[in-house]
Image (tube, rainbow, N blue to C red):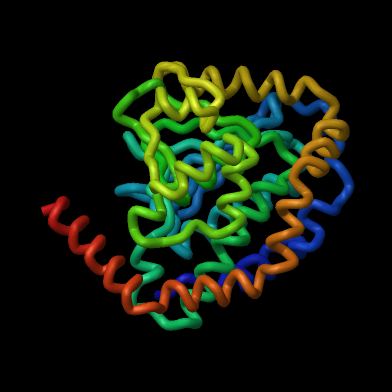
Length: 300
């Protein structure tokens, strides 16, 4: 059965319109509550909320590689919105329940051999994920416990802070150029805001995947820690960020990110059409088919 449209899912769950996603009033601190943990799980994402700390953990659990399918993106946005609307939650840690991989990025099968209507629905879901996470009032920390190419890197870049497991076998980067794909302007803008123009320019043109030590050196991730200490360090960083008054932090975040967010909102439909036009080209479809065949051979 096909995944329900993102808009339809959000309508059923009471999600706010996108135009309000970063225009609503800042979150107020929750009233004191007894220590309590709550969890809810969908097919591809597990969410655990520690109400006493005001912190949720979103664990990606879509083996083998946590690819960003339409189903995954839909669940991601709905889960994030539930937390955004929960006054007990002030921050969220994003991590993976799948060993050695944070997220492999966009699901190639969603972009190969499908209809233009499907491409449009899929790309709007990718946009929605980024808009909601980049504009979130919550503190967002990426605990990158595995490799994170392409769209997986975008999720990490979109967070407020990135901690990566200290393993040289793990890599991260926007490597779309290796597949003959051009990273959209809002991928680029997010990347530039983290690492600076020159590093982003060379990395995007080369489609570079940076091993963890190099990712730290260029500022793509903020810290490296041993994998077994990643959870504790993410919790400690979160506590540091939550020690500040929410309203001041939230308004500062909005000030820093508003121009980039507004740019996609103003050109959202144009961006969808550009994606459809680009991904529908036979040369791109051929490149994607060859990549999928290569992956099949690796598995066998």
